[in-house]
Image 1 (cartoon, chains in turn blue, orange):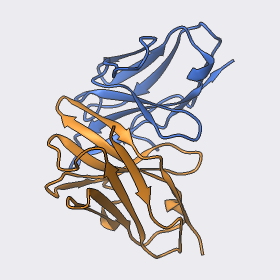
Image 2 (cartoon, chains in turn green, purple; image 1 turned 30 degrees about the vertical axis):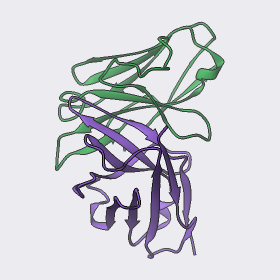
Image 3 (cartoon, chains in turn green, cyan; image 1 turned 30 degrees about the horizontal axis):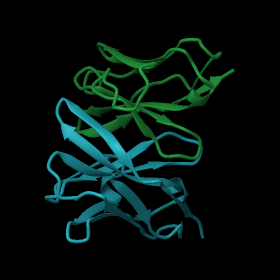
Image 4 (cartoon, one colour; image 1 turned 60 degrees about the horizontal axis):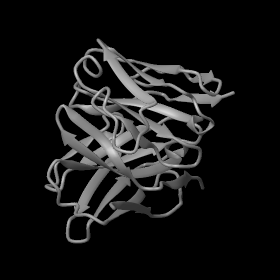
Length: 111
Length: 122
């Protein structure tokens, strides 16, 4: 059972806009910033979004992030076939002695 | 370009200790504001943070694994290591090493190793 809750799957057709949600609680998303990672099949995760809505250099502006209260979202506009991947949210959790919390991951299918 | 590479046995027997090393190249492990991290992913499942270490040796661990985990760092070799004791089949996973920037409120895992599959089986 993951500390952060994501839908297990999402889908869209090329060109569409899809969103993936990430629900947490006060010690994690409610207090700290959210990061998002993209994992293509058979590869290591790649940083997609940090500080809730910032994109590292090289990440297309089709990817955007937002946060409100204890929830966050990743939006992908102009969906492309190469966006088919698993997406994970993550945040530091201040409870106990502090730890990194991940969402369970969302498998995005491009139809 | 920073590169991380995991190494270690791909097969470990139940009740024994899993040992992995992450070799860092293209940059120094003696870097301020960066933690060195172990993350695992059981087959077909999500990511789980195992623990982190700073170049000074300070560590943080996942509370659910803390009693079985040791993470150490060797700055002279630019490496850090993971030991996970008393393993069971539930510890079968791809193990990743990664670098984490820690500059609050900004933090993220920016460089990852390719991952190494460790299977726990007799």
